[in-house]
Image (cartoon, rainbow, N blue to C red):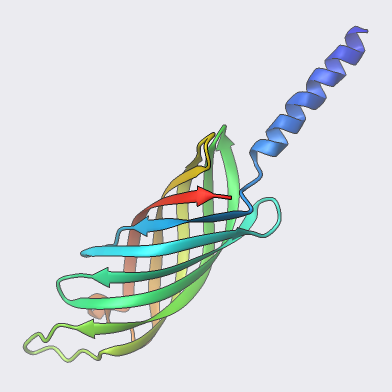
Length: 164
């Protein structure tokens, strides 16, 4: 009887640990932040398997030197830390359109840009259908990317998403 109880308890703990690592089928919310100025993105995540997901963000950026809108997509791998805490990383890219403020002695092109992106973050999955995250998405310009004159940008943001 003790052996049966022991294996039942072990099975229950293992099942709980495995289910704690699963991610939501869908999330929808906001991703707020930027590296220079203010940015807001509508963010959607779709699970692909138990520990992978795709994230799509459509947003607007406003800084001292430019205004832009962009669409970004990232494929993410999600790993459980403990309880509701997860960490994740991913790769992806996107495109957008920029409108630069005229600055003397600087030649900047407005228009379309294309970028590659990485992603690294931490999130907390509440017992209610709320997911909060803090992440960094470094972006490297591929075509028409003039952020800070060097084709590289750190995009730091806070995410608030509803899970369904």
